[in-house]
Image 1: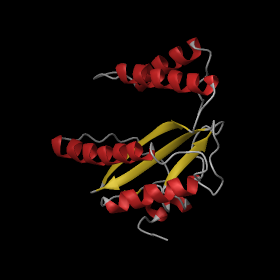
Image 2 (image 1 turned 30 degrees about the horizontal axis):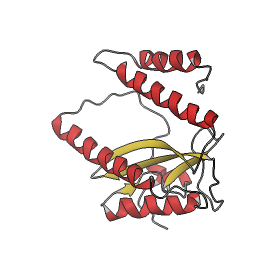
Image 3 (image 1 turned 90 degrees about the vertical axis):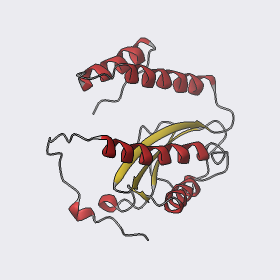
Amino acid sequence: MVTYLDAATAPLRNTGQIRLYGEEGFAGMRKACDLTARCLDELVSIVAPGVTTETIDRFVFEFGMDHGALPATLNYRGYTKSSCTSINHVVCHGIPDNKPLKDGDIVNIDVTYILDGWHGDSSRMYPVGTIKRAAERLLEVTHECLMRGIAAIRPGARTGAIGAAIQTYAEGERCSVVRD
C-alpha cells in the first residue's frame, strides 16, 4: 500500500481562511486539473459492463503515478482507494469494490490528484452500456445544472448564487439537490 499522506496532519476543520493565488498558483492548479480531466477522458474506454470499480480504481492509481501525481484520496483519513465510484442511486463517495458494473448502470467516478503540490479534483458520470431513458435524462439535467452553475460564477458572486442557479434548474426539471 502507498503511504504518502499522513492522515494525522489533515486539518479537522476548515479555518475559514481564503488564500489568494497569482499566476504561478493558477498554472499549478491548471496542470493538476488537466491531468485529472485526462484521466476522466481515458475512463470512457474502460467503463463497460463486467468491469469492476476496483479495476477502475487501479487504473486511476496507475494513471496518476505514471504522470507523477498522487491520488489525494488514498490513505486520506484511512480511505484505502484512489477514487470514489458511485453507482446508480449512490449519491457520492461510493467505495470501489469487486462487484462488476452491469449494462444500464450509471457510475460517477471522482478523481483527485496531487501534482507538484496542487490538487486537481473532478468527477464525471458514465453510462454503462445501454441506459434507460430516465438515467439518460438524469445525465442531461445534471449536465445542464453544471453549465448553469458555471455561468453563475463571476467576480464578487456568492457561492449561494451558484447553488441557487443549480437548484432552480434542477427543481424546475422535477429533480432534487442533495442537502448537506
